[in-house]
Image 1: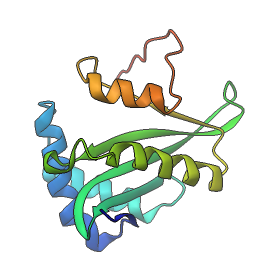
Image 2: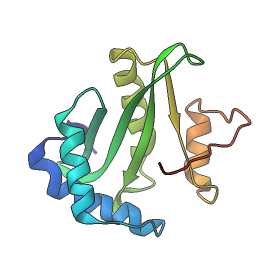
Image 3: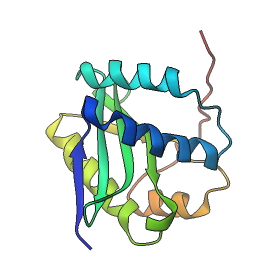
Length: 148
């Protein structure tokens, strides 16, 4: 299987929206296509916010990954959050997630990111195992969030 990563463009938005809808349905997250389209447009137009790549397996869309940039004194400068990593159901259990994390680590180095962060659902044992294998550790803290 040939695996590739294609930087998202405005032309990719319909394809990305389709994949995002699958991701959100998987975890029963709310999904508003119009809102998500607007967010995608703004994100793709401003490279200071981060990067989004389509994951392609043998020329077919297999998923996507979003890297959102931040800054942290605790983590010594520019950091990034793997905001979403989604592999379509028919492409799972083929090593694509691990190869995607390796790709993100290389990109992070090129982008001078000091630390990568991610979240994982407590119920997603496969992902938790993979993330630990790739060097992600729990800092013993909870991520708390609040809308503004």
